[in-house]
Image 1 (spheres, one colour):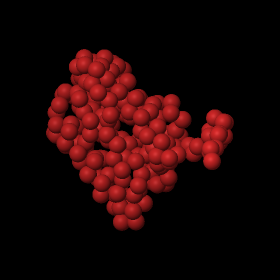
Image 2: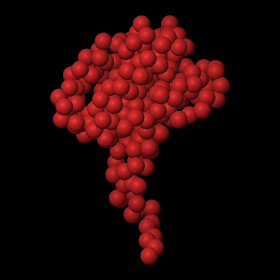
Image 3: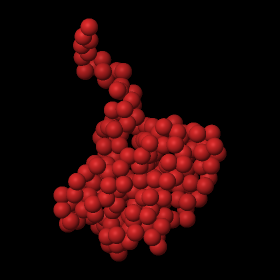
Image 4: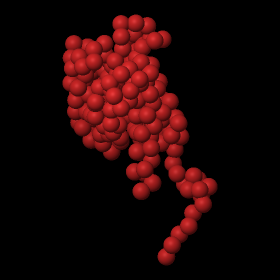
Length: 196
C-alpha cells in the first residue's frame, strides 16, 4: 500500500517546534550570539523564545522542544548566573520535566580557546542530568578566519569569540553565521525526529 501526500497536507500535520534560547550575557556579546541562534531557528519555522537567566520563564522552558543554553567563558568555566539557573532547575530534574528534550550549548569568550570546551562540557553534563538529548555542532570548519564557519573546530557545541570591542562590531561575521546555521540545524533536527 502506498500513500501519497501533497505538501499542504504534510505542512498541516507538521507540528511547530518550540525553541528556547536561554543565556547569560553581561556585556551583550553572548546575547548577540543567542539572537543569531534564534534567527536560524525561526528560519526553520520554529517558535522561538529568547530568555535571560536573570528572568527565566519556566513555563516556556517546560513547553519547549529544544533548549539551547549559553554564557560567556569566565576563567575557564561557565558564569555564576548560568550555574544559578542550573541549580534553580532542580525541581524539574527531580520530576524529569525536561527528559527527552533536545539540548545544545554555546559559549563566547575573548580568546580563541580560553577553555571554552570546559563550558560546553558543563552545559552538556547538566543536560544529561536532566535526561535531555544532546545535539552538537555538525559543521566542518571552512577555515580559520573571522569569516569562516566553525573556525574554532568545535563539535560539542558552538564556540564564538569576541574581541575587546563593542557588541556592534564583534563577534565576527563567520561566528554569527555559524550561530544562525546552528539554530536552523537544531530546529530542523528536532522536527525530523518528531515527523519520523
